[in-house]
Structures are given as C-alpha cells and as structure tokens.
Length: 164
Image (tube, rainbow, N blue to C red; front, top):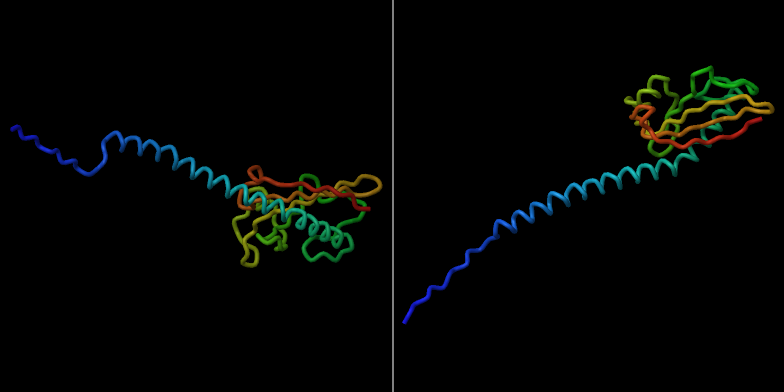
C-alpha cells in the first residue's frame, strides 16, 4: 500500500490576494478623502449662502444709519453722493453666526483676515460701495467667505439695491 501524505494548508493569503487588496486600497482611500473634502467645502458654501442675505441686510441698515449720522461702525455718508472714494470700499467683518464684529482695513480685506476682532474670528467679509445714479444711490454689498483667504481666492454673493 502506498501512503499518501495529506498536505497541511498553512493559514494566510497568497501574494496575488495581497497585491489586489493593496491596489483596491490605493484607489479607494484617495477617493474617500476627496469626497470628504468636497463635502466639507460644499457645507461651508451652503452656510455662507444661507447667512449672506441677513449679512447684506445688516450692511444696508448700517448704510442707512450712516446717512443719518447714527452708525456705530461706518463714517457719516452724504445722501446723494457716491461712496467711498475711488478705488476704495467700506468693509465690515462678520462672525461665523453672522454677527457684525466691526470694520476692517483695506489691507486685511485684500490680503485675508488673520487677526480677530474682540476675540472673535472673522468668517465673512462684506464690502459695501455706492454709486450715485439720479434719482438715488445704487448700493452694492458683496458678502465673501472665508475671510482668511486673499480677496481673489474668496467666493461670494453680491446684492444690489437702490436707496433714495
């Protein structure tokens, strides 16, 4: 009688299975990370677009108060004159919740807001300009986010209205 040996199968995986698994991970992990990154940016854009109308309305309230000389953050504005001077904009900073924090200078507006106002981070920047068109002033409010980026890299929404 011939004796046959039973081969004992060692536990583990073959080299091919390992290579296939590494290939799947090499494709799946970057795709998952890219999807999570995109979801985060879409969420922040949605938050900004939700808050933008309220921020624009607050800016218009400040412009109206400045025309009466009653604004706490803007200088007094003449009712029938374009504002501000040529090549300038009035800039207001807003928190993550859309609360007015104060005015920003031109360099912070152009280069990105790195510092805080009264201990709160500036998340949204609203630039305000007015052009005199008879019989009123056309006011443009542009709400941009995120405030830490340079002006050219921000996304934003513009609002236009006419004041008498």
